[in-house]
Length: 83
Image (cartoon, rainbow, N blue to C red; front, side, top):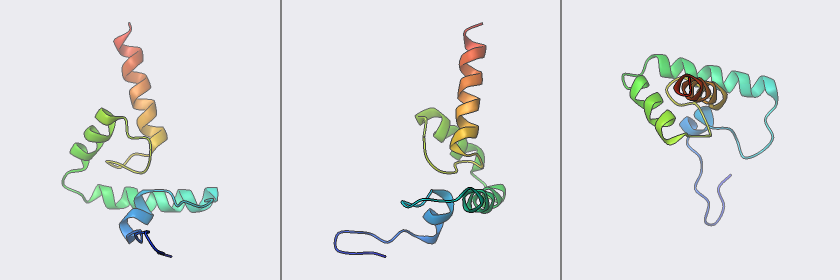
């Protein structure tokens, strides 16, 4: 709920980003699945993912991937780059 000085989160934010309160694993999984389903229909999915990887975004679903999935891609790139 919004209060003085607080902006209510949009329904999109609630799907793509974790809540400010504790989120159970099943809630997180469901939220991320909804966000990823939206991403599959988006015309800029690849651009969104590239941006998130470039700035090393640490939160939310970007380009259809979670923060952990993006972190794995970046780690793989670093590993390949050091060979």
